Amino acid sequence: MSDLETQIRQLAENPPADGYGAGHFDLFSEFRAALTEGRIRAAVREAGAWKVNAWVKQGIMLGFRMGKIRRYSDGDVLQYFDKDTFPPRRLSTEDRVRVVPGGSSIREGAHIGRDVICMPPMFVNVGAYVDDGTMIDSHALVGSCAQIGKRVHLSAGSQVGGVLEPVGAQPVIIEDDVLVGGNCGIYEGALVREGAVLASGVILTGGTPVYDLVCQTVYRREGSRPLEIPTRAVVVAGSRAVSQPWAREHGLSVYTPLIVKYRDSKTDASTQLESLVR
Image (cartoon, rainbow, N blue to C red; front, side):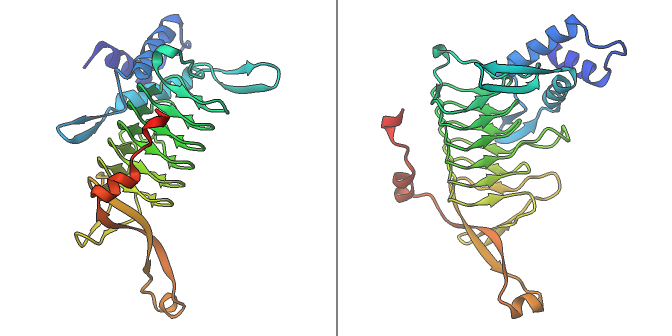
């Protein structure tokens, strides 16, 4: 356990009775900088399995408790109000991140890797980790503590849900080289493995079973184990019939995601990002 982890845990679990002092804010600034730089993460991959760092979530929640509402402004028209412990992140050319004009925002405490492209408007919340070469398209959200891998494409309107509480809950994780289609939603700690493709409109939640037509199996969240989409699976939005008699009488069905194939050379060609945009 690092000194930073120990101190954050102690402060989060034993708040001072007489309020937070300068030393406490210095400690939180060190913690937030480590998040921003990617030196600490809400979840890390070890030997293929993902481990949640609950103390990192504790530190983020601590920041919200410590912070006070302040007014931020860029000129006379644009103004907003947020906790002073999580100001908007200011990038420089040295970060090698493209943020196209049009109303995007990234919070301090979110890590943005090299050569990431941010199309307007989009938002990355605190604790998120976005790895190198990823594209975040217009109207996309990367929620708190979400972990996004390398060369991921989050298409327009896609929503990656965030999770801070409970602190031990796994955040949404999207591994390397995943394509998330337009208007997709990934929530409740779902894990999308490397190279998978989510077609437009796919919704993944902890309570939604995913039917694999290729392997003839069903993937579900089980206990603390999240819903997991296999490596290189191609998922589309589908439906399944409701067996209840009245529903069957009326021909009703419910939404369900379907794995219709696994990636091949044709899929790779159709999902390859245009190199010119980089």
